[in-house]
Length: 302
Image (cartoon, rainbow, N blue to C red; front, side, top):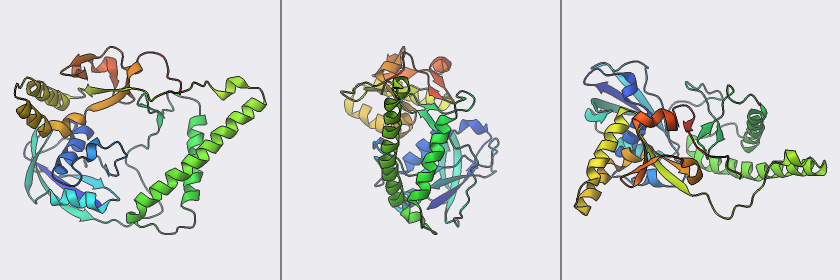
């Protein structure tokens, strides 16, 4: 199910003023008084996605742009719809925007066209994406093609898939990948051991406990800087109850700029107001906008 938002700005401002973090924070703010109010904090995959704001180009007063939000969970989209009123004014990136909306149900076909690149994690512990420019070895990419065959197997015999079935099929697919991936890796290691090719088996280390994660606020842009300054002012509030109430008002936006990094990889990141913090002036040293957090120390052995 999908909901299309039409955005009419009250003034002119640059296109990059509203980024994916701004949009994500806006969506979570719409869920604040719904059954999905705690969705952001759940340690699970979030079954929704959203488009870039289109058409691309700077915002002009009165000129509509659009945002498409999708989810296989009908209740999720209906919760967003119920939080909106036609002509309602919201703030995106500090600018007033009038919003109207409609539910859309496009016909699905066997071919999909993506307006943005499809990306793969190379190492999700380090928040690093796979790149042909950085990694010339095609083995990783070919392994993903192999997993694509598992996708075909999972959906074998199905000529039509209703959108409401996506959640169930997603669970079936990942269960199948989990079973077969374990077998594939075991067979690879066994093959190398039989050849006494110990170097090819990889390094092993018993894991006694999960890696400790550290939350870090990334001052990604001026909007993040504004939120951090608001947070810093809130932390100076002496009244615990007032401090908590004020933080709850910005909680969704605040955590849209927070990432979790393994403790060994944090390195020299300052601690302020009880949380690690990368300022906008220090962003280039600790955060790459394409590959994510810039870690320090040796590689983890898993």
